[in-house]
Image (tube, rainbow, N blue to C red; front, side, top):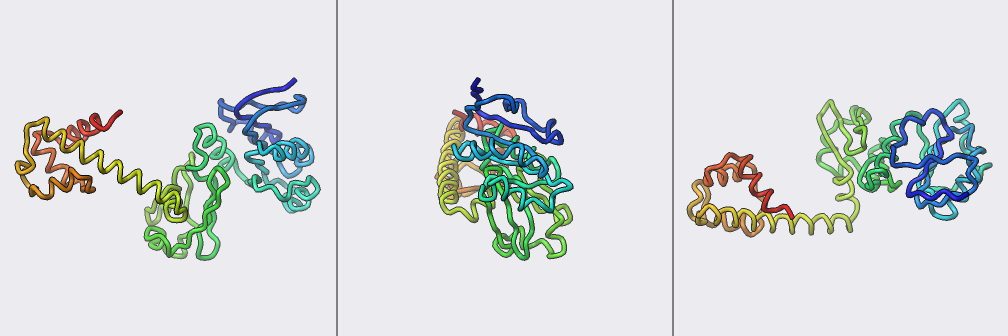
Length: 269
């Protein structure tokens, strides 16, 4: 009997039972056929032969999203086991030793944003290797990002990844890096898209500032602490600082929070 679901996981490895999000359908080996666009398999090195046929079939249909392989006592034989299972060429394999990596990946897929969250990261020489939950790999030289460049060489490996994969953190120097910043640096298409989104947001923000000013019966020249020319630039979409927003708020007789709340209400669909 065929089982149809959006996301299916075969947890052959009991180690991983408790990390499966409720949005996933759990596959049982006695089910002869599975129809799903997104298939995930959790196994140990020793159990690779058990899942190999199922994994090859899912991979052939381009439905395999991740084969999680937990390093066990047989980890030294992983290359040979993958070779014998005819899985050596799959880009969807993630080897892990704890539950953190599969938990981040499965959570990202359950949230519908595997391209926006970090699965794992590693320092190799002068580079930071970061893998997104959709298996996209980014290589960033520490000299490419000012925030990373601040991290002393001896502290580069002392990072943590947030439980959901939203950012990396170097606690000793208090540096946070998210995948969006990395993608912005390395992916030209993404960078152009984000620049356009920011430009459109800035324009809409400026329009909201102008609309709120008019609603309060103020002229551009009546914003105390800002020149008329400065107000005009802000209302045309120039990005502004918190201190400047506080000046705008006072001119409206509002606290900064009240002012931003009213702006947010104007920006909401």
